[in-house]
Amino acid sequence: MNIKFSEFLRSATAAPSATVQEAEAARYALIRRLSPVLRHQLVRYLQPINMIYGVMDHRLSTPHPSLPTLQQDASNINKFAKAAMAQCMDISNWLAPMGDSLVSATQGVQECMSLMGGYLNFKGFHLINNVQRTDVQLRHDALRSTLAAALLVLTDELTQPSDVVMDSYLDTDHFALLIQIKSSDRAHCEPYDDGYRKLLWNDLRAIAAVQDVALRLLEDGVSMSFAMEPSRPL
Image (cartoon, rainbow, N blue to C red; front, side, top):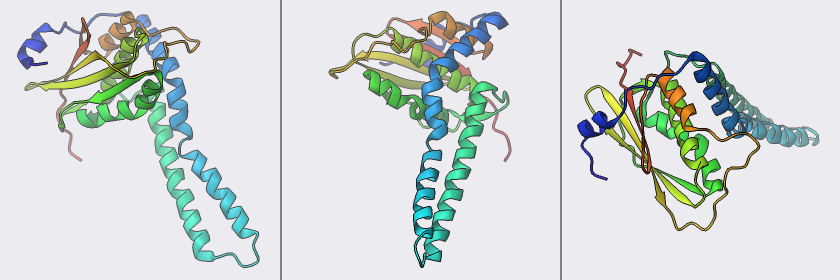
């Protein structure tokens, strides 16, 4: 899809308005919907620790355990424990975001893909990341909460396998994401039915409003425009 960024940006609405209660309700709904994948993220580094411990316990029960091997096992446990701690801190930021945290647009989009790609693929939706690599800085919570909500809002209504294509456009002070739904020849699709309500367009509007993200619903997707943030010294 050929589109000039200036035209795209003019077509995006200003950041929508929402009350504090609407924004908080929408964020709660988002966290509830993301809870299965967040739970998976929490345990992904804990499972290897349990497995390594089992192996260490077996080795220690032998008459002459190898000290270098046990040291390597202990080192691996330490590595996974540090990764698990970092993962827990990241998950906690979904619950209580650090408002001043920044992330590169490239990294932020990739984080959402890593978090939601498997879940959406299981449902029959293939994420395609055509976002150009860039070092521009965005507010971390604004990017991932709005992007995650948009992906759920769009796919919740789908009943056929589809590709979810993400493109980006840069201006002097804005980074824009365009998410489009395209038909796919994949054979499998699971309509949403996970016991909690679907995420709605009004939820996405409320989340975008509190994050000052310009938002527009398109015929085949959604557009979002984020203000770039100045890079901070390390």
